[in-house]
Length: 105
Length: 221
Picture 1 (cartoon, rainbow over the protein chains, first blue to last red):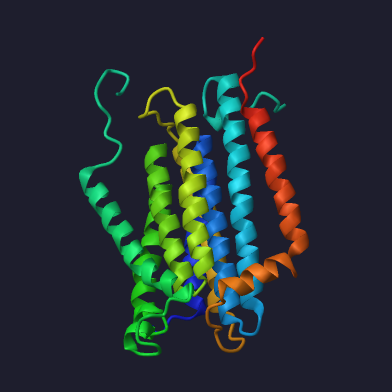
Picture 2: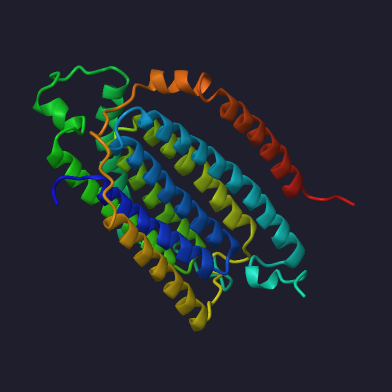
């Protein structure tokens, strides 16, 4: 219990991942959904780095580089998503994603 | 100021205190490790102090993991049960900071610093700007139906159970844990082994910058 191993990090990442999924499906504010996505990406990053450290060999560098790319992609995704949110707000005058059903049948 | 002229306090004083304590703890944990990672190492080499500060002492790792892992999990769950978007962003800040400390504990020092700079410094500020640009009143909230909450809760709990079964039912042991990687090695690999993805992601960032500016621009007729 005192010795921290891979399993500890995987369990923590699972908790954060599921919290992110719940935020994604239960928020009606588009920014709230975005915050859920950020949580999911963070959980995945914890997994990458933990697997890289505890798998031995040279995997640690690979894991850290992939995690770095995930952080960059998360930043890019957030920039585009916030731009879409402002556009959405300008068109519908609300940020409630339940109102964005104009193209549904 | 709210809709009726009453002031809306974004953060309770207790929460501010907790946040300040968390940031102080983060600074205290991170500073000596960054100094050591950058080749400072002025402390007693290989002795108890550098052991503890370097995270190689098991007790330090256990305390750090349970403290900051607990904080990360708690604030991630708090995001689920917060209605106000600004408070969600503040809880996200706590999660991101705690995850950065976990990177330090996993001896991924460079990643921890990048996490603080890019996520806490960039992405989070962007999200808060998004909140400010898309609300009429700071206390605006949307009610979510009970059945929607229940369905989401069931789905994520099932997902959690499946993940736990997978994590605890598998023997992940594959050799000894590796130590910290020098930042120089990471940089060299980024510009040799990972040169193509590195360049692709540079182009992607440029495209995103242009695309976001195009999407968010104010149309003038």
